[in-house]
Image 1: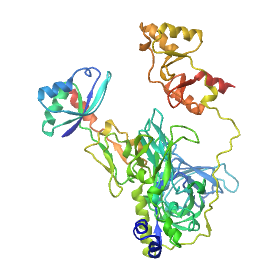
Image 2: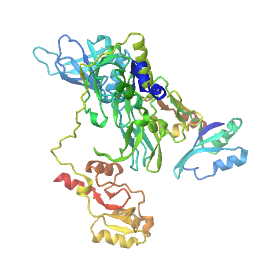
Image 3: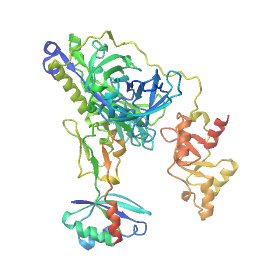
Image 4: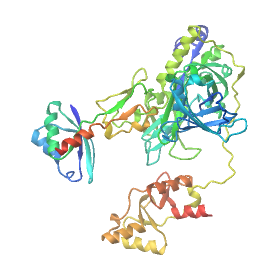
Length: 471
Length: 142
């Protein structure tokens, strides 16, 4: 479609093309499966359940369970989770179910352990409450350390970037006004036919961040298009394959489905900042993202995808074949996805502390001072940390009372031999919790607070944190 | 060229062993990566195939542990060609080809000493294999 519109124009493309198929295959954490186990004898009203040691939700009734993709195994957390359980069941593997209950007159049993395959289940439905994001942010990390996120492993100081999404192949991007997508739209889901059952949670159409809620018979799915996955130090998830056929009902849809990667933009976002509104460092197109490198400011950053474009293409091609062979019939939605939904942030009724709220003025020293002078300052100012700065007030090191004690023990007399140059720092808008975690992690008792130019703004100490907690 | 992983213990790390062997055997040894400090060192080096045996012997005589690093292994069944590993590779050994398949260049990969890509793989398709260690340790004791 895209090439046809380019070469022959929208009018020709509208006449020639009946349907455009799309596809995407990415990690979609808001996924899961509903299963019904049938009743045991004596019967049990399950209170808590585990499959292969992964805790399974028990939303209601007796033997209906929901396997959440991000629930993690109690024995192998971060490596095996709900997404893997779903994949194993789809693959026909046997899984172990354990459950406990409080026991009632009608459901007397208090525990059960059994082995099941998908054939033993009455229902096994994939039921995903938010899938298929129209586009997604491109992630980088400005911190001095590697961070592990749901956007993958992000190297320090913007050394790499990651993104997700199929760009011009994304289902919702090809019908951005949802003319053909809504409740009842038949789709490709996990290798079989499924349905859109409404807009997904966090559906944000005005910002081109639409999502869908989907359902499909997982018994008929194929593990090639439904894959459990692990993101180190983040947790487990499920890769879901989705394809939506867009019927070219009007000239407008011919034009919209001709969308190209260079017309789809997303923000480069700093995932090194642990806040809801992470700083936006730039704007890039999916064309740049797919090229393997992006430019942010004057810096070239290598970028890799977390979703599989290869599988996304296979999904679009499979859907096309199904339609051509008469195995798949398009449906009109009963109700279209809404265009006016707003995605609000959480209302918080309790205050959260940030570094800026507790930081104090830093007592500083300069490179050319004597150890004696710094030691004196520790005593007179009654602090344990002296921050070393240059003439512009930028951080160059830190000296602690412990460093001075050690210097005395080892007979060192020069300040340069005592100062720590690799300083672990905090940012003012960082939550106090992450700063305090960093202190514990590095076994230190204070963090100089710096701005983006490394200018020292203050210092936050473990003492300040404990005072706040003790309040 | 063959690739070898050299491990130097704290007691021998200060000695110019690589230089000595290059001079003695007149063999070009190309250092690919080196992580060395006062506690010891790990070096991956390339050696011409025909000289491999005598170079390995020379290193072992001087107390270095030598192993042929088995590089990373990729399970093509598990790999979904997402590409999460691509930009993490410091030697650009992972590429995406024309049909968007992720391909590994085993020649370029520096293997288990790096392993940066291993924990970034969502489907855990990449394993770094250090199976030659045991063999190297036994040999050095002889």
